[in-house]
Image (tube, helix red, strand yellow):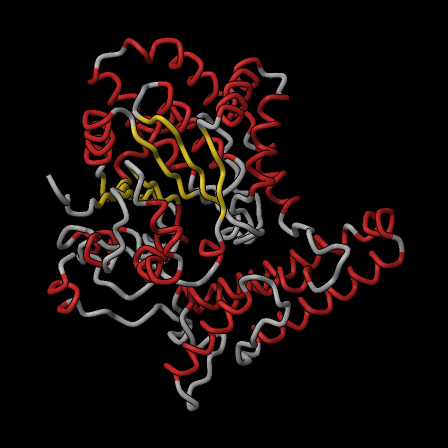
Length: 448
């Protein structure tokens, strides 16, 4: 966007639970307390394990953490003011400055609280407070209250993972000699698999089973009509152009969910490297457990190891290949505090300049999932026809693509009348998870 376009862009209000009956309202009223309850249950179920590992100190920490989470649930349900963090961890000052900024914007008449403040902010804040409750209570500070749910979801998706790895193994043997048109067909197929893998989101199902049971390859034809915006050709062109300019470039994947979705991302990354569309792949995950099923470093490493250890031949062979990529530095995993802060991505250049500068070296940045889409768009009440590139509000470190199944009531880049037709056919089309987008934006080329 040019400076003039930014100045004329009318920025709408943030989505908020102020609107009773809205998806944000129902999320904060119903889904977030359920997630908190499940986190408490997970900590309590591990009471005996904490005692075995740490003795009475572990039991004391378990009780204290549960007490803090119970207090947090009460604050949420009674719309209490948002409180500063007190754990003094590295990112605490940034969070508290962000709170102060919102307090100044809202003024004394409208305190920053759960139902009266931006939904994106308070939802992120809840997950940060869960980590605070644990970090304030060593020796269980490193416990992942969502690990059991993520592990269960992974194992319940095994049949789909087997089918996907079998498909990948056959493709890996022939990909080197394929003509461009056939390579595009396979790229299109695996990009769709990664796209629909985003349906497996445990924060949306509040921790209930949401795993992939069937072969994702077999479902693609029937799912294609549900892709509302499909910029796959532009994504392909960005990779091919980078390859033609200086050889295969680097692809950055901003991960979303662990479990089956992460496997679809690993399969896509394997294909990108094996086909020569990418030289290296950098995976970006969360530095702490987040939104129930978001990928952490532990989840990434665990998934690769589990794939290696599988009794299924093609799963195991895929895992061995992925381990080799990691060992050789072809694949790397990164996290950064910015990914677990409430900032929209248009703030990245100012608030995390090191991260922004790092992304600028990418041939393509893939943003997976709903939370990343909400941060790309600022989680605001945009018109469905607003241009995707415009609502990024200057965020353009490199050619970027959002792969997202719709599970929140923000969507841009649609054709005139498209949203109205969808609303008539299915009123909850923006939140039901049945629709998806592949949306691309590229910054203007600079220099020769």
